[in-house]
Structures are given as C-alpha cells and as structure tokens.
Image 1 (cartoon, protein in one colour):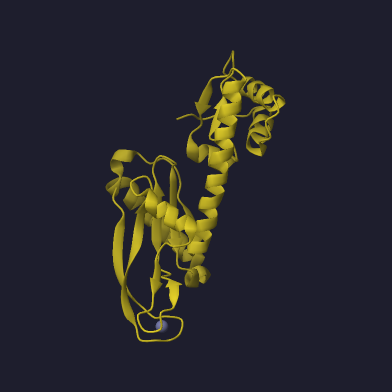
Image 2 (cartoon, helix red, strand yellow):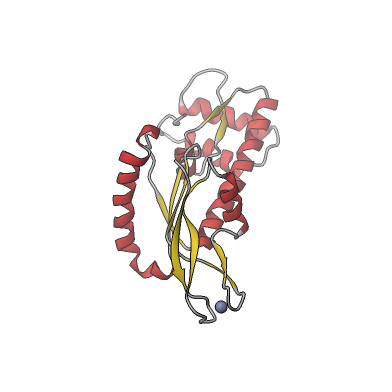
Length: 213
Ligand SMILES: [Zn+2]
C-alpha cells in the first residue's frame, strides 16, 4: 500500500488568512521509512504559514500502517478527543474496509489502535523503537547463550508486553519450556523487563503457548 497525501485549507495559530496545504493522510511505514522518521522527529505534517512564517502541525486525521510490525494506528485530530466513542466506531468500520479491500492480500489479523494528535503518535513510535532495541538485545543475548531465536507474532508480543524475539527452548515446546529458556538467558546477565515479563507469564499455570510468525 502506498502512502497518500491529501489537501486541506488551514488557519495558522496567529489568525492569518487561510491557506491550502498538502499533508500525509496515510502512511505506509515499511514503504516510506522517511515518513516514520519524520513522525518520530515531530516533522510530520509540519506546515508554515506563508504570511507570518509560523510553523505548526496540520492536525488532520491520518492512518499510520506498518505491515511487517503489525501496527495499524488511527491518528485522530487532537481537537476531536471529546468524540472518542464515535470515532472508535468509525475506526472499526474503516478498519474492516481497509482489511477487506485495500490490503486484502496482507491478511491482517490484528486489531487497530487509536491515538489523538501527532504528539501521541510520536510517543507510540518512540515506545515501539525502545521495545525493538530491547528485543534485539534479547536476540543477541539468547544467541550468545547458545539458543536459537524465534520471532513472536508482533501484535501478540505488543499486546502482552513481550519482546519481539525470544529464545527457543532447547527441548520441548510447552510454555514452561519457553519460561526455562528465558530464565537461562536472563541469568546470563541480560536486563530486559520484556523478557522477564515473558518468563513470568509463561510460568503461569494454564497459559497458552506463545504465538509465532
Ligand atoms: Zn500566520
């Protein structure tokens, strides 16, 4: 799926005359990594008033989609926060359309999330980055400790606060086997709250086997 630009008339915060801008309304992060960088840097949909020169963000709705990361974010305008309930209904409807038509071939099987404003998107992506770095450290430590590394289903890992990569058990495939493998990697000196949480959850009675890609 390609990223899409839209046009809109905007008013600058200094109440100058309205002017037209182009802004990103759909971001396909794996196709356009520059747009992900812009969102992280706070430069996404940043516009400048031609009259007074003020820089400000165009606060329009947009969709942020990262297919490999299984991340679909509906970013609603900050000023519509009071309508969250209605917007969540709209999001669900739009999600079905996206899932069943636009990107049918991707077989999306993960739920969307919604945030209000570009600042909230930035925070969400920063959190993602942090978890990705931590997951890479888990993968490196697991490999160094002699384990094979397996990739959890990203949306499942995100939902449960697990790392994106975990050590594969040296024998067995039960949740407890995963807990034992995680425990060994943690004992090697790795500090990872995500892996610690994975180990704790996998040690629970009756927990389901983790989901993999
Ligand atoms: Zn202005």
